[in-house]
Length: 450
Image 1: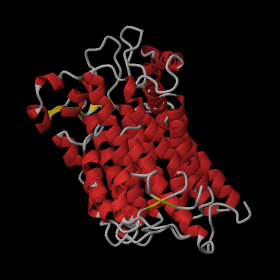
Image 2: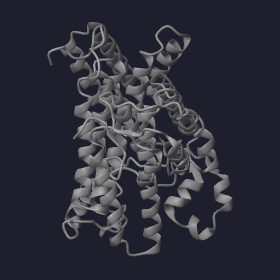
Image 3: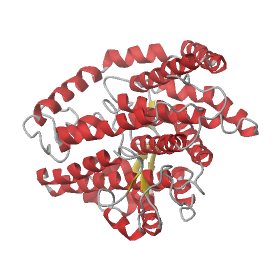
Image 4: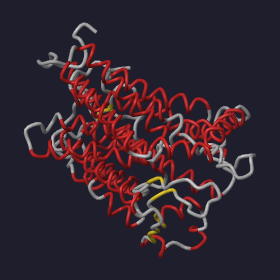
C-alpha cells in the first residue's frame, strides 16, 4: 500500500467534493478547517449524554458533524491499511442480504451507522492536527477515563439505582420492549440482581450498558492516561492525574472483570519489555512501582474472595465457550456473509449467538472475510506503529495490541472501538511524521537498531 492515501472511491464516497489531493510523504493535510469542539462534545459531554439516554447514539450524531467538516476539508488523507478497513465496511454492508426481519434490520442499520460514524471520527482525528493536538485529545480521553472511574464508584455505592432517562419517556412502548433499547433508555449503575438465586456481588457498569464495556474502556484508556502524563509533566494536572490512577484501581478490581485483568497484564508486560529493550530504567522503575501497588491493593480489597464466589456460582466460562463453538459452527453454514445480525442460541436461556465478543459478532453476522478484514486492520495499525519511540506512541501501540486480544471476548461497539480507532489514528499520524524526519533525541522505548 502507498504511504498515506487520499480518501477517494475506496473511502467515504461523498468526500469527492472536498477536492482530495494526492498525499505528500508526510501524510498530513491542511487542517485549519477541522475544529476540536466536535471531539470534545463526545468525551467531555459524555455524562450528560448518558443521563439523557443518548450516549449510545452520540457517536452517530457527532460523526455526522465531523463528516460535514470533512466534506468541506480541502485535503482528506488516509493512512496505510485504511483500504482493509473499507473492505470490512463494504462486506459488512453486503451482509444485509442475510437479514430476515424488520427488528434485525433495525439493529443492523444501527450497527452500520456506528461503524461509519467511528470511521469518520478516525479520519477526523488523523487529519485534524492544527486544532486537535495530541495533548488535547489525550486530555479529553483522560477526562473520559475519570468519568468511567466515577461511574465505577457510583456503582459500588449505589448498586440498585435505576435512572429513567428522558429518552425512556419519549420512546414508544414497542421499542422499549426491545432489550437493548430498554437498557439504553433506562440506566443502571451495575450489573446486579439482588434477588438472584446465585448471588453475585454488584459489578459496576456505569456509564455503559454492561460491566464488560466498563472493563474494556478502562483497560484501553489507562495506557493513554499514562501517555497523557508525559505531556503534562510540569503542571499541577500531572499530580492530580497521577494520584487518580491508584484511586481508580478500586472500582476496576471490584468489577471482577477477568478480561480487563488480562488486558492490563498484557499492557504492563509489553510496556516493560519495550522499556527493557531500550534500557529505560526510569520507565521500568515506574512500572515496577505500579505493579507493587496493584499487588497491595489486590490484597487489601476482597477481589480474590469475590472472584472465587463469582466463579463458584456462575458458569460464565463454560457458557462463553459453548457460544463461541456455536458461532463458529453456525458461520460454517453461511461463511460468506454470515447471518447479518446476532440470533438466539439453540441453548435455552443463553445469550444470543454473536454477542459475547466483537470478533464473534463480526464473524457470525458478516462472515469469515469480514472478520479477517476487521482483525487485519488493527494488526496493520499495530505493526505500522511498532517503532514509535515516544511515550504517547508506545501508549497507542500498546492499546492496539491489547485491543487485538480483547476483541475475542469483549463487544467493542461503540466506545471500545472508538478508543481503538483513535489510538490508531494518533499512532499512525506519529508514524507518518517519523518517516519524514529524523528520530527525536532522548531515550525512547525501542533501541535504535531494533
